[in-house]
Length: 282
Ligand code: ADP
Ligand code: MG
Image (cartoon, rainbow, N blue to C red):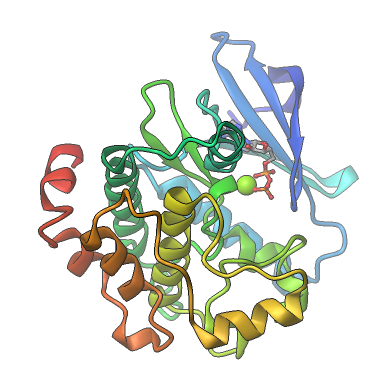
């Protein structure tokens, strides 16, 4: 039986994001705490709606311990709204963690960073490994890897969220329109409007791990135009000296301006630094 909005009791608004509202809800049948994300598809064209449907179908199939579990979807045609019902992540997101560390002037331990890093690699591997059914669109890429989309659960394990939706929900992938905020993690090839590929996810992951260490993104600027210049130059400061050279070099390899020279997920997972973490958390 398809579920209905009235099967859920709204608890409160968690926040508003680039796609719509995110609410904490309780499923009436078993009191399970979940979140729902409501999205307006009213302004989408027919092909865009088709794509939204197929992306959401993909989300349903992504079942992995480090990926936010999608439970259900509800469509309210009269309001042109789509509701995605998902797992609730109690530990907050990495954006809040980074903000808190910056405020407290305390850096995360390298151990903690390597745990998050290895769990993110495993989540992305599960996602990249999944092929689209119709075959012609290839791998499932995340496309919107950023601290706000990485959650922690009650055990401080990673839960990666918001797969693939970036592509459907932002009508245009150009530099100016892709992000509502500042696109700190945009890869050089995305800026040049070259096709997004799995190495673009590696770039964003490199930016994310860098920011976990340094508490600021590798490339920063007061506006998008200057940010684009910084990204294309590809220069960034070393992560704080408390972190190992191995970690610094790994991040630097992921931030190679030439996408083909960046390591693959498997290359990173097989490195001496991460091997034992990946094994432990697999
Ligand atoms: P964004 O565009 O920032 O990713 P979202 O709609 O994904 O916006 O998120 C809005 C807010 O809801 C954020 O504060 C985010 O941390 C929170 N949030 C999103 N998904 C979940 C979830 N599954 N569990 C807990 N909090 C969530
Ligand atoms: Mg999000």
